[in-house]
Image (tube, rainbow, N blue to C red; front, side):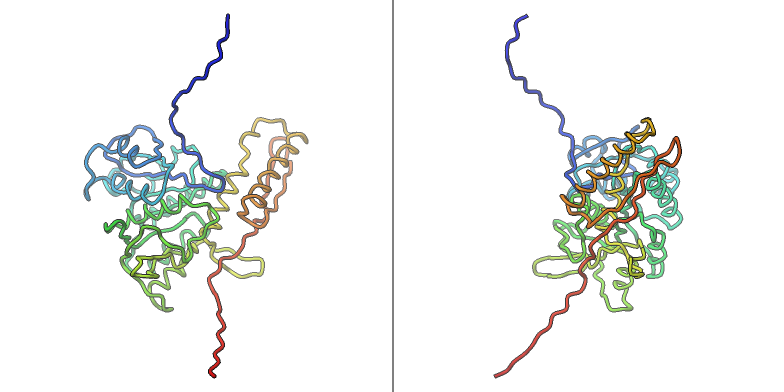
Length: 358
């Protein structure tokens, strides 16, 4: 048989591939106008509309339909859509959301729920997030939130004092001359988070595309704005009205830890995202089924050393990772992530000024 040299070009579907340090795959669990029997993966607003929406989107459309434009406009490019059919339309319970989310066995990074859930329902979702963390597939929640009083906001934030959220959004953003709902604003924020590397703090950083915020809060010690920032909410404020520049005051989260010097502190968004990113990298499922002997332990050690080199020396996400690998028994190998060393976030700059009049 004669072999004639040739070149063949075949067009294939584009598959989103996250860049190093970019953990932005979003899972949306919500009602959509098109009944979906299985989760679908989409990478653009047009694709999402084609696969999940059957009717023109209005203010009475299912919650999932209404947030798609904001999510992709914010910057999301890798989205899993999971359709649900709650017993009460427009008001799923925590159990119904968890039942739907549990079917998502693939890895993803952000769970977006476009409903203003009660604390009881949020607690149910938090339990699911804790289970994901325990199985070495951590995710974190972004969702809209409205409460009556500052104390209610603080109570809700406390549900996540051990982690599990990248931000609960309570304000309405104006984007492209359109006032978004709180759920749409949370979706837009979710898109902004998803498009950034995990080591990027939002503290005093511009919310691209946001032209106005409702309500605008103040930040004296007893004001609502101060209390929400203290509790770990991503509160937006105006930095330059003429230029329509709005920023997140402080991207610290409700997650509270004790630092090496004994100080209790809230983790910044970049720390929470980086922790989840590293845990996902340290997942070693492909070693399940291997023989539990020194050769396998050495292979695991080498894999983790390469991951540490990439995360610390190449990407510069953290200052150090301290870990160890040990054989527990004939069936179990334990990987201990003993310490992840972060930089702090600059929230205070002191300027000294000297005057001289001659």
